[in-house]
Image 1 (spheres, rainbow, N blue to C red):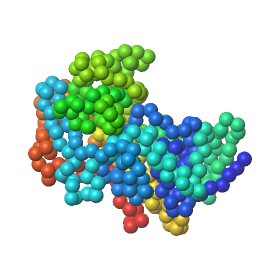
Image 2 (image 1 turned 60 degrees about the vertical axis):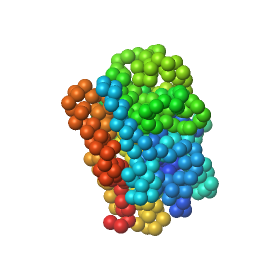
Image 3 (image 1 turned 180 degrees about the vertical axis):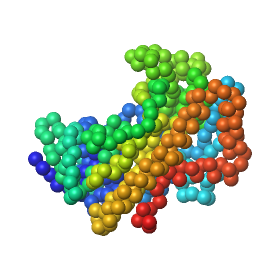
Length: 401
């Protein structure tokens, strides 16, 4: 069976769904294919930087996303060795940007907000339980073969957006490289519930230590025992089967035995960390977005941030090609700009963040690295300048080029 549409999006994560929504709003006929039976809710991204919120608002998603999550401004670095706490926040951005705060919301919850809006459009459909098994293209169109429990279906389209994650089947079928490296350690993302009335803990805290380093961020504000993301690192040689046996000792070392005894584990997800990028984000009529194009460690929350920025740029560029007859050279410009943003900016910053939080064994170097944050806590102008980095990861309108 063969079906026709203008664009096929592979992957129903936030990046794929946002792309489908933005195209549908321009009247483009879109089919999203997803191998899973529904949205996935394993512990993944939870923080969406202030610079991504303008795009959510343009798409009509901001208000519902805020209702589902919450906005925050505070950050803190806690240094285990010395007990130093360095606090700063996004308040210096007030009066300079429209949204001077971050949004905290589980990735699955954000995907649900997007999906609810997508489902209001008649020109976009989602095929769940459809796994990509083949891609063929020529100068005029792309044919993708997807397999459901009953049949193989061929979808013909003018363009395909591959947003199917770091293990992208589309990227593999197209024989595109995924250059870079995989970190030797295992990262473990947990969702935990524990008392919120702890002095000196920001809603986004970087706990700096060689052994017990962690990223700790609040996910929701539900009751006295809020849901928090606690992400830590361990030796990948340790058996993953006994992961939950080791977790209490980490929690006790960071929060103390009394608090650790009150913690409830809601979800846990071990995974490998990468710094990788596809060799190109465009091959013919197929475009890569999100983790299908690039994968980074989560330190600093730049993974889905980059995916959203990919989607915003692609919505405009691909929408112009499909709906307005723009030259498809703009899609090559998209591919080049987004790859450069990751390779030259996002990946180096995420790597630097990881080194600071989890590999701080040299006291002199650590003191030098922390000095910037100490100065940010005292100097709002400097803080605003440093915080603006996230905005530089966004690609300005390619239509104006």
